Image (tube, rainbow, N blue to C red):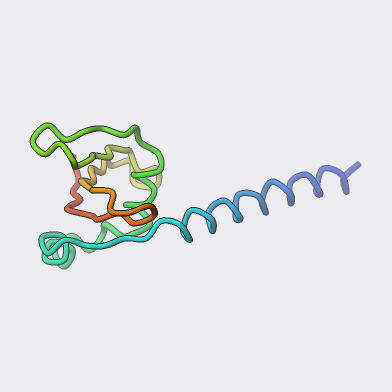
Length: 103
């Protein structure tokens, strides 16, 4: 019985790892000049947090720019709310315009 439970657990774990690697493979980032400068100031906002926010939020249109999207998501380990302003460029590339904490 324990072998079956352990086998199911390992299968789920391998599936999660595979999905995470699959998303990381397809999600490529480009950075705007603004974000390259702000990234030096906001060192706690990493690519992993940006990717998490984009994957776990709804697609929200920006009110000022029609071709720009927003991702607003609460990041679990810290509990802070991260806002990412990005634009889809091509099929698998995302251009990060800026990212900042709302709280």
